[in-house]
Image (tube, rainbow, N blue to C red):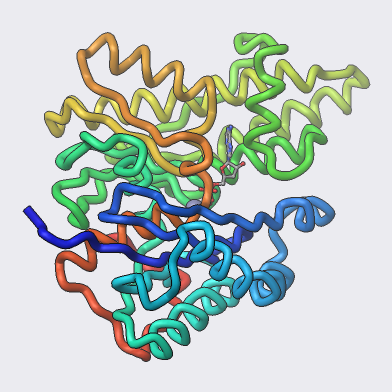
Length: 339
Ligand code: KG4
Ligand code: ZN
């Protein structure tokens, strides 16, 4: 049992949210500040990296100051500074890494670099105080679709991954193609209940010889072909039916692969993480599948599913306890691997 509380300041800027948080002992969130750039990127139909970096620069100091203020702390009160250093957009990551390095240097606090996906997985520790490894985690975000066996804190085995588009990316692209705008995931989620999920049969792709891998480019193309087919025939199509049928195809695959892996790897605790883990259909389907098999299902509250710094503070805590310390040469690594 540890005898002293560990309080960490965490910074996240890998994509389009500038975020900072103060987290105690990896599980207790003392503040969670998120400056979202969604409204700005909506104008362009997706994240524009150059604009994201500039906005992070504008926001980062205020966001960090606010996170400390809301936690009622000064920088001298924290035990260390952790920051996402990859994967993500290089220019965006560099803003957080630069800020975290400057603060930790000036305040004489240890610096801990954190993997963004490790952060998403760790969001579950914040929302489920009793959750401990080992467990299986489906990580589904805008940039990643991974099936990960969490062996222990900070110890991962990659069981499956996407061969092309990430699940969130497919949601965003399909939403754009049916005119729903950015970000598409929440819009498809909201529209789908008004449609018929059996109206259109979209493909459920598997990768030969890799039963836990995903491929979402086929279903995305099938949606585009369906729309083009309707246009060529001069017939209208229902946005809601497409949203519902597409969501059904993607969530079917996510759930069936996760269940297959849970069985094969003997895992009776299943977690989800990342922005797509907010999806209502996915949550309901995964709940039913886990219920049938007697597995316990965990997923974070929506605010901890999408990008935030509290999850980085949680992952950073376990890295800090294992002794990870980074030097002033910590750099952004856009393609950083989990294992
Ligand atoms: O984890 P996240 O905030 O950022 C990355 O690390 O990529 O995930 C963002 C992604 C976007 O693609 C967004 O459309 C998707 O998560 N998303 C959703 C939902 N909410 C966010 N996808 C489906 N249903 C949702 N409710
Ligand atoms: Zn993310």
